[in-house]
Image 1 (spheres, helix red, strand yellow):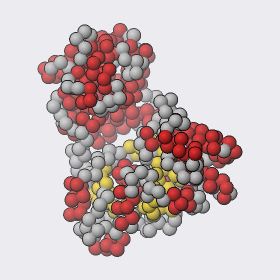
Image 2: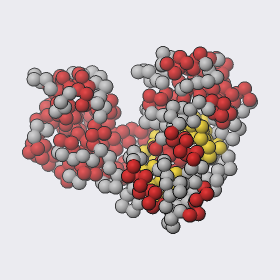
Image 3: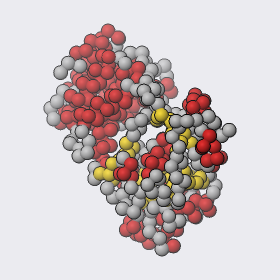
Image 4: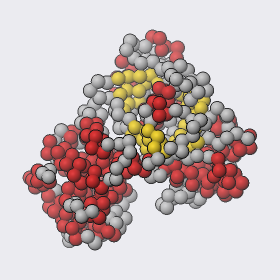
Length: 479
């Protein structure tokens, strides 16, 4: 037996059933991966109980596997909340699915008067942006979309196509809320849509500029990949097979800019935060949550841990990270209405201790050159500008350099700058200096800073062996 609306009444007792069947499709979503279905779709599912207009049309432009499985299950799937008290819910927010190649259906859906919001989770590369964060007109999909605007391949192309259809039909523009971890995601996606529209039809571009809203967002919830073990556990618990279950921690956060349309779904009523400072929430998440993640990853791997929860069970390491967040990171963040930073730190650390979520340190450690400038080095720059010490902030950075030096090959690092990083970290002569000289990672204000160099040198020595690292963690955890 497979999950569907026909078997809901036969599910095991205690399993939360979905609310009413959506009355309309009010939202189109591109990218029905695990994070979206565990996060945004859960908010919408809870909203449907009071407003059934906001069913989701799930769109996949590349792979039809998830949309096919959702179609076979009447759009239903299981959300498993993983913590000390696990919970299972059947999500019923999916009103329909559109797979690859179904261009006519997708065009019709985007042009529907019921649709007021389009959301996306297609990863950063899915927006076809170049190194300068603007639309890459030489991207193969954008080249295709310029030649064939009626049958786009890219998400940006489909946003332009949908808005063009609505303009031609005399309908209002839908709002667009990208939900990927892309800085200023609303602004960047809006600019990309404008750029493509301007090449296709300047009058359309002008209409989009005046009518469409591109809503900046920040999303947060630890969502491990769905694996075979999850499928077996869910099937055993609910009493039937579910081919597309998802799992996440209980904590979830969805922050949206206050240009969210008044006629859109009332997401605030189900816990979303509407704010004039999405960037502030993003900054706090990057420096506090993600900064702690990277610190636990590099220091934890050196100490033999393999997961975030295991690293947090290492008392000297968890105490060091807690001290660093409160004493070094938080002072560099401006006050943020709606978020108590001290409480946020405590919540982050509590989430990291959740042993029901297995978040591998090796996964967090990849792409360090792309992550650390925002996660730790921004905090270092803030501390230096205010005359505060940086030894704690730079110990995890030194641990990253030490981790790089112990890789057998550049390929083992899994980083866009793997080759220069690997050679610099393994240099016989001054590895710290050679790594610090890499301008793609370290900004000029830090490369020439004697205090930064001294702190990195001290961190490099401290990460040489377990005994020295124990001593460093203990000494740096004392205020």
